[in-house]
Amino acid sequence: MAILLFSLTVPAAAARVPNAPQPRLPVTDKLLLGIVVAGRAGDAISTHQFLIAGDEEASLPNWVVCTQSRMWTYSMAVAAGQIVLSRMLLRHHQIRIARTLELIHAAFIWDTVIHNELLPVHHGEFH
Image (cartoon, rainbow, N blue to C red):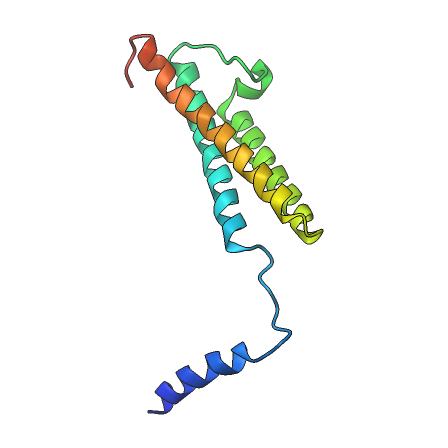
């Protein structure tokens, strides 16, 4: 009975605190940035598979894609840059701009991943 009362009292008491700390990053932005990071990881993996299949990288310089570690470093640095930019915009109450950039980045990177995955099929090669 005491556990039941405690479990009902604590959330109610926390809800009444007017200056309760807010989460640093809203859930929507966490999801969007997670999609960007997953897309960047997918880009690193699919670009590596793309190059193993014998295709040429069209948009990145060869020194970036020549080793898998460089590609991962590049992809995670770009993802980290997106996170820093989004947090800065959110801190300055530019929520719409931050989310628009997150959506554009997510759409762009997933388009790249899908392109890398589908292009070898067009050449007649299968994974």
